[in-house]
Amino acid sequence: MTKTDWEKAVEFHGHACPGLAIGFKAVKAAQEKMGITFSSDEEVVCVTENDACGIDAVQVLTGCTMGKGNLIYRGTGKMAFSFFNRKNGDSLRMIAKPFTREMGREQLQEYILNSRAEEIFTFMKPAFSLPDQARIFTSVACESCGESAPEHKIRLQDGYKVCLDCFKEYSRGW
Image (cartoon, rainbow, N blue to C red):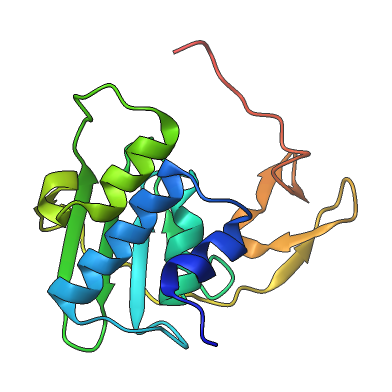
């Protein structure tokens, strides 16, 4: 027996919830409107503006992951997802509309899953361009703690190469 996409998302996430349903609905809308499929490399990119439950549906159904470099976190806190198709240049941003009706958790989840995507999301083009493909950086050992970090996360402090954990930010209060 094959699992439905919803069952796969729930299994990966650990439980069913309205947040997972929003991510699930976003993926289904992107698949329908853009024709995207599972991304084995970086053919599809998702820029998520939140770090909530819905991201798990995005990962399991699109193949977009932080490790592969095609799931990018842009922390605005908005329930928004931007999908990019590297093959044809297509892009789509969707942001969840506010829910105006009072609903319990299970009722909200069912509403999200059973409504048309246009009821749940506002659709537009992303205001930013397709992110570059993931890069591999040289690791540099911190001269304070000895731990390695990628070179773009190393800072110079008092002439020493230090990681972000050891770096002491300088500010004059502005």
